[in-house]
Amino acid sequence: MIGIIDYGAGNLKSVQNALTRLHAPHMLCGEKADFAHCDRLILPGVGAFADCMKQLEQRDLINAIKQAINNKVPFLGICLGMQVLFESSDEMEECEGLGIFKGHIRRMEDPNVKIPHIGWNDLCFTHSDPLFAGLHQPYVYYVHSYRATAYEESDLIAYSTYGDLKVPGAFHKDHIWACQFHPEKSGEDGLAMLKNFLAFEVLL
Image (cartoon, rainbow, N blue to C red; front, side, top):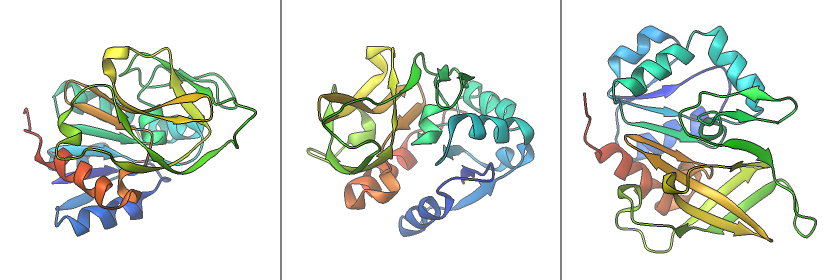
């Protein structure tokens, strides 16, 4: 069972639709008790970093997420759900994140391109990773104004370029994956990534 973490916002429907296309059993996890029914978790997200962290805290989901990660449940963060896995963000105000990945979320700045970065982009691999098994030149969909910075280079598995900016696209550490782009909105390539995530061994 795949748990989609529901903190009152985020692209839940598009993730649900993608999992339905893959015939993958899934449920919404809006409270800590729901996590016990799931053997892997997806944290989607749209909106502001601080608002997301506030909602996770109010619903007592921060401890649930950290406990699941400590228990080695395969975990995928998407877009804002990726960003909150880092140490902090300066969006609107400096706000502490979950600190699963080292690094900080900062606003993208490039006078030669439009911010936010919205649309399709090539994905370049830094090294092989099981998330991209069977994919050679994936094309993925982004919607964001902020990007990860000061991260561990060994955690980065893929990136895109936008103007003069290097946009970190995906990270992996242990049993945790995180995508700045939206795999659930990235056509067949994105579905292939989700299918790969669903195939990862559950290390419980």
